[in-house]
Image 1 (cartoon, rainbow, N blue to C red):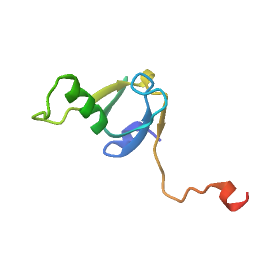
Image 2: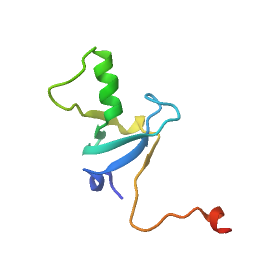
Image 3: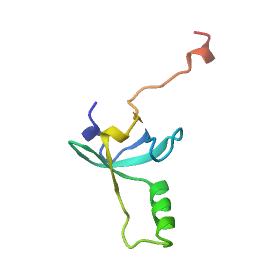
Image 4: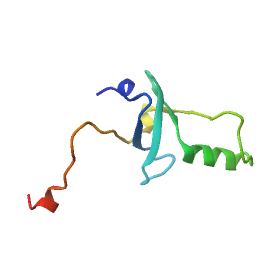
Length: 88
């Protein structure tokens, strides 16, 4: 799987600089050799709070370098099962 295949999709990312243990749900907007462009309501909220504005005229997107992403979680077709729940 390539990040470029996820453009337009929601993924979970762990970015320690932003949250040490909290995964963020983001939408992948674009991919460059050095990182990804994402849309995130949580990041928008933080940015608007930082600039003391209740609204922005356009939706901001954010560039995150690959070296800042600790984990990214996407999904593929097919069910995911908890083995312990089925006694495996």
